[in-house]
Image 1 (cartoon, rainbow over the protein chains, first blue to last red):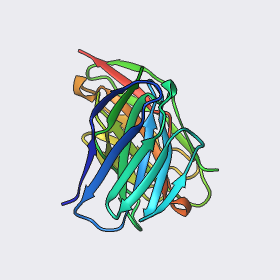
Image 2: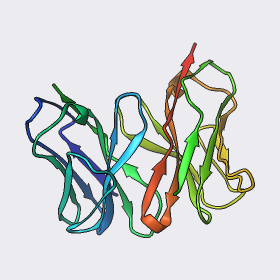
Image 3: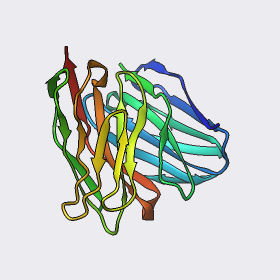
Length: 112
Length: 112
């Protein structure tokens, strides 16, 4: 069966520090991968998605970047965090050609 | 572009009350429609889905019917429980762009 893992689950970082959130999917190949952000009390904002290795689509201009170095690995990064980067980050995957999105447990980032 | 609009929350109900959370969408073509649920501190879980007009998705006592004529996908449950307290997200699959578009979410609080 397919599983999705996200880490770290919780992160507290100072303003200006770098960020790396990692997401991996097991039990499938060539999935579509997604990063969403959920700010406190707000809905879901799609940040990035990828349909293949090295292929990244950015939905909104921001302080973050994403990379897909391997088929089932999706990384969210920042060189210098801002206070506004605080939020709950969710990784998700979907089989190519399907339409059901499966989410990881999320990573809660607090920037101080 | 494609979009989803949900009723604003929070929705506060007593146990065993009837629940309706409204959702309407704007899309070209005939998208698949979804309801996801997010329990406190967790990622999102698929609750139910419908892929074509007049389809009814159902799960755990929740139901939603795909109404093309009113472009709606309202979530209903006949008798809510305290354990149903969560945030509910309506979403549509924008197939041309390989991504799910979410509404802002509706927080439901059920009191004993």
